Image (tube, rainbow, N blue to C red; front, side, top):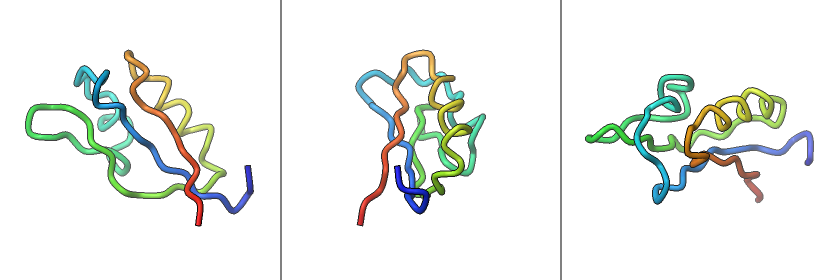
Length: 72
């Protein structure tokens, strides 16, 4: 991965069960929808924050959170 890369979370809404850990742990990256399911803010993070992002993604009981590199 490029050191200048930008990263963004994504949520697989087909497997999200609405536990809410994502928006509790990272309110700057996620919000809750009207029924309590997480939604991703369109914020990009520097590659240096990958480890913290991984911790948040791993905290999802269903594994619905992933991290992707933004290109372009």
